[in-house]
Image (cartoon, rainbow, N blue to C red; front, side, top):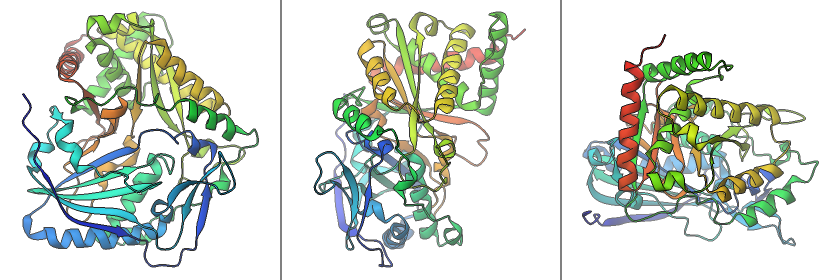
Length: 455
């Protein structure tokens, strides 16, 4: 039986506005790449830090001051999402001088070391560390929570405002301002210009209809009271073995090997474990095909011209692919080959097609959901460098995307620690029985990798 969660004590609530002032009232129209996320669940992130008690007062004050500095560059995050005046289906981010971001300081009587372990933790125990978007149309809320021996920085963000590349760029800017590093002065200014996203084919209307029709469908796995969250790490050596096994398996099957990057190898491995971890009834129910969805950054591939990496907004689309359940369920090299081949094919197709057919994105997602075969989506990216978000008191001890407990996605990041090399870590949220099955599948599969003879 789960123990009751400690009580969260609110120490301070504030609204932090961008400083120095000077940004005029601004409206940024949502593009077709933004409107897709209109009704999606917000993104919830947690950064855990170890911290000595004597530093906390200064740290909390500095976090607030540096937040106002970072918001000067990312001022749209201080605004609100609203219907464009005089329209019924056009939305915009509206910023008015004086707008700000809710920033809450709390206290939680839990040792930080209890919360940064990789093993399964109760989502209910860490969820209080994540703020809520309380204000109407708010885009961003932040919370700093004092723990025993540490500090947690929580963020909740409306996905219609921007994608993970933009939101983590904001976090890096905030951290560098807090650390007082010269790097902030060298940090490229975000490009706040939605006119860079061209829409000659009227995709906004298509995506608006899809966003309205898909309300609720984004929550592929509903939150339950007993949800657990755990982190599974694949080392550089593990990933290399996956690549070797897939290459040999493709040769034995007389198939062309997939382009098995470290990300493809990791996602394929986790997807195959995830499918095998389902109980027999769940694995048999539904369609014969199960699907994976991976976000792809299209900034460098936008037509007619690429847009800057610093573009602030959404510029991602889903890479989707299905695989036969029976083949994916196969343990060993054959199941791994099927999974990695499907993941590589999804990414290659998304990269080649770009944003030319967004009307198919919603249809593909609904088809995958309605098929009953299951859909595993992906959140985050190792390119975001979340373990480099250092506010001046050290690198994070742990970073979580807590919202995967609502969406059923797997959270992907680079391995933490300076000596982690090229490893990757994945956050998975499941109920207790499912987590036990997944843990066993993962451990058995990693052990098999290093004992399997490759001819």
